Image (cartoon, rainbow, N blue to C red; front, side, top):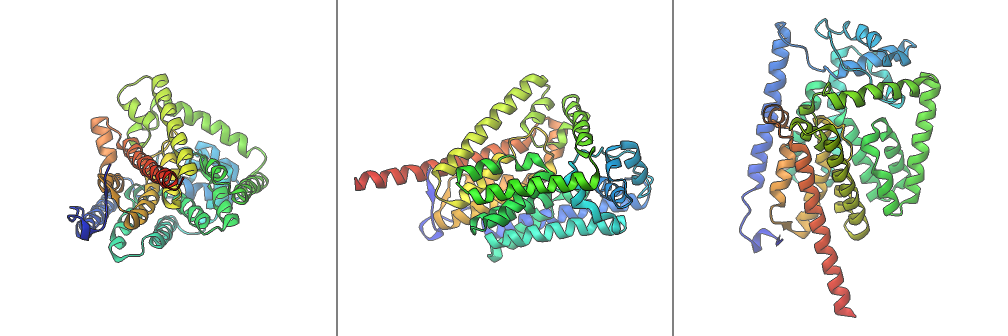
Length: 404
């Protein structure tokens, strides 16, 4: 697969900075119009107000602030609090997060729901944007970063995908700066969403980052201990019980598959039996893990290793929603940073564009055409990272052979 170098050596690629900026403006316009329409319909009483999922967070926070944190795992109690936000919220999602997440969102209900909702999403988007700008400080990256940080599924529902992406990116930036203790703290805090933290310890072992590994383990353990002390000794038992419901809902479709971004959900949309879908998903998860491990052992570029870690992470769990796809901003930024210095692979820019555009209509396509784009995009990005590493490996081997 050829590598494209500087524009002076090559015909200018069709995906120019001007086109990228135009796409970013269009994405921001779609986001603004969609949210504006939702609030208009909510104001005239024919739609549920925004922040449907954030209602769970705010209600759990309210219970915690009133000394009833463990009651967040009781659906009826959680719903009683949620209906005080809006009578339209007659149905909400159950509380499926570990007790550690209750600690993280504890103060949310100190503010009125609308203010808390906006602050939660705006602060997370701003922090993620600032960190991405550390990787891509050039002016041409400003609008694309703004567009992906204003990630519609998160803003619309009030989800935490952007917040967890901040933790993941902070950990990777700190690892790159050899600040392993603080990187480990960020990874340990990711235990609030274990399916997104699962590959980080493996990567740390591959990279022989022992300090970060120990720091992450200690942080996760201390965090869990504090949660058990504050929330109550039955907190983790309640969490495990709640996740029994989650597993069953994943099987029977109570949780809509078209809203997910996993291979398992895509196969279930195509009416593939549960066992076959799980086996296929597990096979891809194992392959993604193997690819990530191989890249961490063979790839000298930290940017490519970081991109591989995040991309593979998004292929591991069968339970990931589209709002978690904001994590794709991380490999996109790392790969762009690397490619601007070392050249592009043919088709790589188009693949990253698809990843960047994933939230635009991906759920509608899955709902109406039974095609889940999330896993296909992640597999595509990971394939390009494997190709990059193979080419680098071949060059290193060639140089060693020449000097032998």
